[in-house]
Length: 270
Image (cartoon, rainbow, N blue to C red; front, top):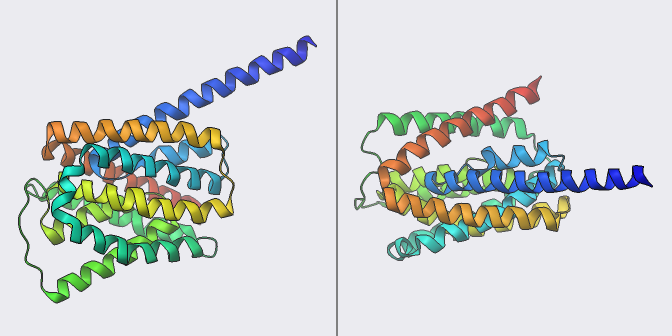
């Protein structure tokens, strides 16, 4: 009897410690993600796997939680969206089919090649953003011709496929694509990214992935609270401190996301 009681208390202590740890990891990773425009999966997804959550369950839970991140970030910076309604619609109309496709083929493709590709791209973007000292610090009007608009939509569809297939880095790609294509500053680009990618893309991807692996409601609740509060705080800090803080955080997060993805890819090759 005493043995059973001791095991029960130990399991409660482990469960409490596990829950608190996951909450704080979720909170801090999503705070940095809200400032940089993506990268929550850099800490949150590996942490879930280390705590013994099966991969597809962890991935589905992570994506559902990042919907809360998108809500938290959008709620704080919703005014930035009003000037970019047409861009939002383009990302949803052309990106969501890519997410559908990516999520439907995730079981049949080797993730190591996707990790390798996205890792290299993420590192390149961090270096490029560092070298371009004025990138994203102020907004400007970019007049787009037909070819540029088509190219933007093709890139959005491809990033949508990556978003449906893997967990990290796609928000960063959309953020930098908006800055380069439409001349947005970081704050505006991140606001659009959170509303489109954070809420709609990730929700669709999570629904597909939840069919592959079941999602723990207790775990999901902890992640949602951590993601929403972290997203709101990060959006608040980014608006308070401006584009310079956002850009610095973007460069750091983008670089480490790239390193993390490259390591995942290289480990899977050996």
